[in-house]
Image 1 (cartoon, rainbow, N blue to C red):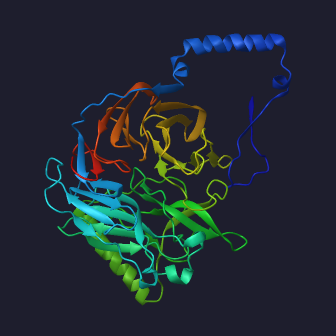
Image 2 (cartoon, rainbow, N blue to C red):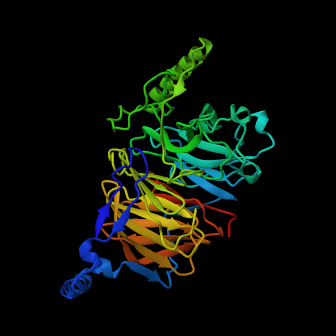
Image 3 (cartoon, one colour):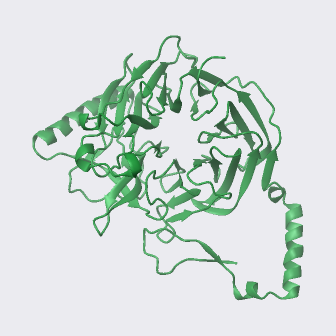
Length: 463
């Protein structure tokens, strides 16, 4: 078979992949068919990777995992840990009393006894009748900063929100965590560039902490119609978004060398100077705008949520979770910029993607289904070959997978338990896994702390 691309496809549009039989394949001779069958049998028998293309575990042993730390945080949907400040942040489901809870950690990474600090996220009075909720939580790896992306409850029948009503709604909130009480130091990402009224969306940082990948952006197309986009906000070394004059040239997608990092004290001074400059530009009638990159991919992400999750491998190759499976986004490829795959069985809107940081593997979990995870290889961001599938009987997954690089394992939250799947040196599934029961029927969020070597898991209550 050969790979055929549409030669008339314009740059920036979705790549449609199709397998087209060649003339030889349409009418193969008997000799050719016999030869191919013999070679396939030999190759299959000699290659253990193909023999393990599908792995099914009937039972998974129960094993205490000493690095798992549970925290009582009912209705948890998101969790992030800031190693610098020693804070664990938990985002709750919509209509919870408070949207975010902050737990202090001691010097060993254990939860400090006492009630958490509760954060009620701000919203304008025009949206007071619509509950706001967390779509994503992130922590800066080097600075005591917490990033929150919020949205409001959608209107009935998915009606669009009046831009005049959402004009003052800030999707991005950045809190300082270096004091006992969190301090809101930045609020932004408002206006028509950001869809208002979504229940989900991807939120991620690139490894260099220079891009903040955000969900549900939108822009006007040539017909003046709003279309969904994917992209990021640029971050400065101080941890805040970068700003520019309104008529600045569009952002470039080429990877650039990250600027030198700042220590917390220098970053705080830079933030103070930046915020003062922003206010001065407003007073002068020349407000600065966020430096952001947006790119439309109307076939892969025709509507929000767009995407369900980001998984950046580097600044050129980003993997995303679409409604039908994984999507690869290779910025340097002018011909095959996007490539999307349908995962079988097709369970729409249930996929979440994670990427291995050192080997060319991505993992696609099918949530609220049958304990199924797929692994696919990639070559510089281009997905290749058929997926390897692992299914654990009696499991239902609820969280995005998390790769443990040092131990080469894959962690995921499930129904009342944490599952830890073993990987080989190439990132492929081994036919072995362990589980640990926790007091949460739907473990939707887990967070790993490199500093403390702990996996934090919110639970509904103590046993």
